Image (tube, rainbow, N blue to C red; front, side):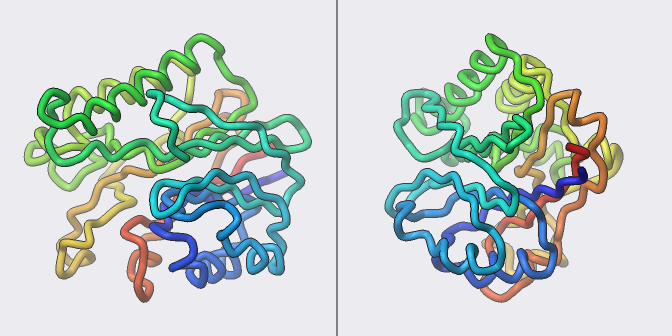
Length: 262
């Protein structure tokens, strides 16, 4: 059965509930994973999503910060959460479909502005978080699993608008990209987006600071869809809906899609 999944850093699910609804109506993915919901779970407008067919949810939230949610048209049970780097923040939630497929939804720390853990504790927290991802999935290699989310790292040279200019910018420094690659390898994860779109510049985030983000096109691919090889072999249809970044009062991220034969 083909199952279409999307991941999107929504940057406040209550503020942008209308955009979420619009995406669900236009694209109708079976599953939508949201990050940076910035809301306690009991304040997420679940009834709106329920009324258009997304009746199953797994979510973790906190007031004003972080927050992750999985909305599904397919039957899904809450499969728990992981507290990496001992941050105690709402940065991960998992859902399990009826066939046993597990979906991990992550919001990795952004890491602040200075790529130095001594000068910037937030950068150290980010590196520790990704290191814990590596340890966890390396110790217990997953199967029939999909990992998505705003991982806040653009690992490849063609995942950023200028590799040379961003080498010392948080999200594309060598220490970050090496850490993310190590986490991917430890878990045996396949980068489904790049499996489907192997060549060329590819972005999912454009800064609010750019007066004309579309013309400047100084993007980064921070949002990812990975899968274990047993599911990646049947993946297809990867795409990034760049036009959503241009919707009224948008998130600075665009949704990323992939379809799996589950």
